Every structure is written in C-alpha cells, then in structure tokens.
Image (tube, rainbow, N blue to C red):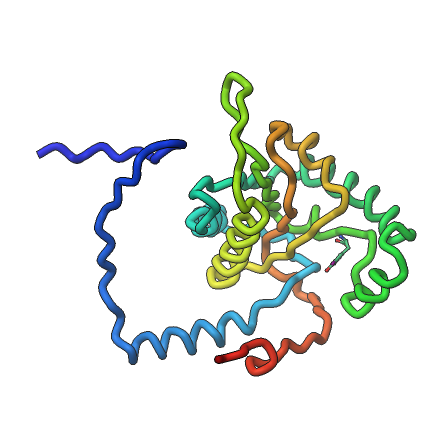
Length: 232
Ligand code: IYR
C-alpha cells in the first residue's frame, strides 16, 4: 500500500483536518511529571560566563527542532534559527554588538533603564558572544517573501517567535545546556553579518554552552506562584 503524500497546507488551502488521539496520561504520572518539570525548570539560570568547551551539536539541533514545533499565527512558522559555530563569525558579531552596546550603556538606554539593569551586572563587554561555542541567532520573518519578490503578511510574529524562543530555552536547559537571551540594540548588524534576506529581522542572539567553572549569576529570587497566578 502506498503511503499517502503529506504536504504543508499553503495559503488559501481548504481545511482538511486529520484525527488527533494522543493517549491520555494517567493523573498520577501527570502530577509526577509536572512536579519534576517545575523543579528542573526552577534551576534554569541565564548564564553570561561560558566555558569554551564544545557542546554536542545534535543537542542544539534537537533543541532548535523543539522550538520549531511552537504554535504560530496562521501556522506560518515565521522563524529562522541561524546556528553560528564559526569563531570568526562570532568575533564579528561580538565586535558589532559591543559597538552598539557602548552607545547604549554610554547613555542611549537612559538612567531609568540603566538603574533597572544594575542588579544584573550587565555592561557593554560581551565575552559570551565569543566564549560560548555556539550562538543561535533567531530571526523573525516579518512577512513571507516569494521567489519572485511577492510578499504576504505574517500574523502575530512577535508572539510566535517569543513562544518558540521560550521552547528553545526550555529544551536547551532540559538537555543540560546553558543559554542567554542577548538582545543587542539595534540588531540590524546581524542581518548584514549573517546575510539574511530583507523579510527577516533579528529577534535575539542566544549563546549556548556550559557555564564557566567560575560562573556567577545575580542573586535573583523568582516571584512565588501565588504572586503570578490568579485563579477565578
Ligand atoms: N541589550 C543590552 C541591555 C540589556 C537590556 C535588558 I531589558 C536586559 O535584561 C539585559 C541587558 C545588553 O544585552 O546588555
């Protein structure tokens, strides 16, 4: 018997649903998994000091594949993940990012913003961009760009890419890797350095690796569940 050919529904295709019957998880197992996941996720920290040790590349690719399962507006999947391993490209990204950050920390951010950042200890020096063995540069596809130059609107791009990045961070953490969401501003240089098309806009640079042996993080406390959850 031949296997039916599946294709990605494209713009304007009719609704052709297929059955979805995942096996229901036993409540006991659900509770145990949720509690374990909560505990493991609570141990995730944003890392700014990375060991130069290489990471298993397939772990990073699998995490990106997890991120790409994210829901998206009209299922348009408006994301591109550029995995930068090349040391020279990372050096160029660092140099350009630090040039922008010098202006930002030198006053562009404004006193209120700088005061908000002070407890985090960030500054314009970005060694993580070259110390981490890999960078995932996430681009949003602001619109669809056809081969002939025709464009189609993408919907809820910020939300879609934000969800995907959240899933990426979870996947990396649960696979044993540390990461940082770095948002140099403005980020236009990333399109130039990485040669991305005009419909793509950089969203974040995510260095990935293992924490340095002497890694330190700010002494942050997260809001408790009752501070963030309202039940009605
Ligand atoms: N983009 C700058 C500044 C910065 C802004 C926020 I909001 C942060 O949470 C952290 C840093 C930088 O990357 O240093």
